[in-house]
Image (cartoon, rainbow, N blue to C red):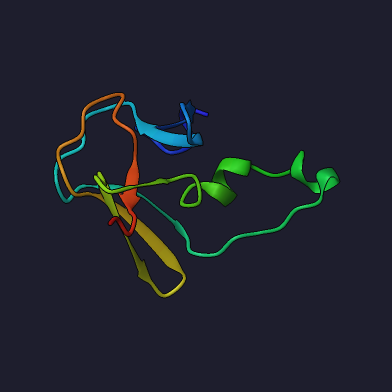
Length: 99
């Protein structure tokens, strides 16, 4: 789904399911995207009528011990920012509790 959020695309992440990756360079601290910090539950019938990327953009970020982004919340908005320089093809990964 390239183009719905400029510089970000949805892809099949090996061993992780769906994920997000960047299609252009991002610098440390740069905003990748912001979106509503809430989710929806849609019936099968409704799903075809709505943009599934819009509802799931933050939810599609896979977890990692080596994150590439940080997600912060401001009221009802979630902001996703790079915590390292990213190049095209890098997966968008948020922090996960690692042992």
